[in-house]
Image 1 (cartoon, rainbow, N blue to C red):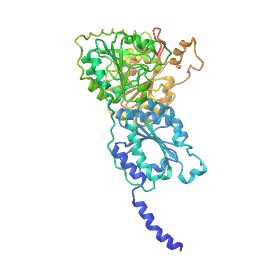
Image 2: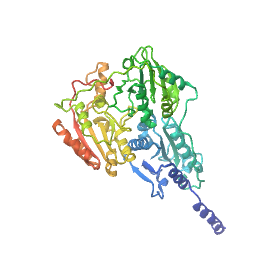
Image 3: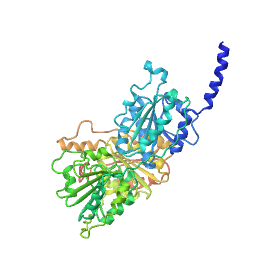
Image 4: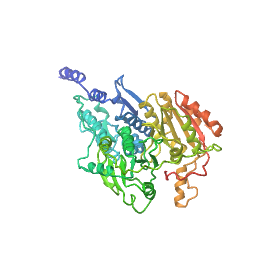
Length: 548
């Protein structure tokens, strides 16, 4: 009987191996979606996913899951397509949660897959399994799923892609048991799913009429413009209506050329300063941004007296919590195209010219001088990826971002994003020089990203702004009457040795006379380099939150 049973079982085994599996169906699906780069740090519960890894796919290894998420985020933003991440169950996902939070704030489409123990073991709470796996990453993902059957995995991944790419874009999560990948499954057809939304309320016509009648319009440009690649449209609209253009508070992207005559500056995350900056405007269009994100307490009105505010945003949640004005839920690029129909009023006033900023003297190696010299030496095809909060006012004043997709940082304010994100952006923008402008404190959150940059040979110039502490924290402490807050000093770290230990060439600069040569060396290099710059305090510095 046993022999007969074995004989009868053989055709079933042969049939199973000849059929489509969860793995093969998933590979075909991802290939059709253009998702052929996998960012990860695998564990035992993920290994079956990578059996017979296809030759046309690329696996990018990060040495810690926070770096993995940061790299994938940068790559997805650079390519404007969802990126695929593979992390270990439970603890691995836990390491990644900080940058998963940032990805949601960045509106970055990510498909995060974590392994799960074999289904047959789950009733026994086995080692390295994820308990209540779909709850762990919430509320920082748009959708989370652990498929009920192995056969449902390819369809779940397809849905995850569509959800991640729909506005507002963002990360999604899947928990997949390790024994699912070899199970039989049907192929999944790639569908066309709309990834734009349009205003259905008619409010955009009201905004067009208001803009047409405005004498002193002002625009507040947010990251949504960059996310939808509406650079040309916002420039055309500003020039047509001679409107001054501000950057929204704490914007993680550049959305308007900062050397343009109509560029007005950066709005601070402070209610009173926002109102003062926009004073005199009669119509204010907030485009692709919240209205407004604050970081310090304030009181009084949210917009200048007599001004009408219209907000254009693709996230209904952002529209609901705005404190003032009319919110219009729409994709940004079509909204700008519609606004271009408005003809400017014959009574339109000419906006005042922005005063030039004098260059720093260079007598001391201050952050303004560092930014000034980076601006002078950077290649034309360079992209700034920044995470140096206390240096941001100096950057905004002396290092103007003038090209489309020329600036990236974290929308969440969390640290540990930009150093690995530079890796993903360099992968997604081949041929461009990436300048990772990172604070000393910020860099230590995901310093392992240097290893990935070295292994991939990417053209990244890391510039570590070493002011030996969490200077943003020290500056913010001034608001509370603190001197030097506890836990805000960082001393004894040799960033050059850390970089060299991970495969990068590195130089340290403490003398302003040596800065230009070090920057040229780094910018000319074909592979990754690191320049550690020991800066001294700028006596004229304004607090980092008080953007101009």
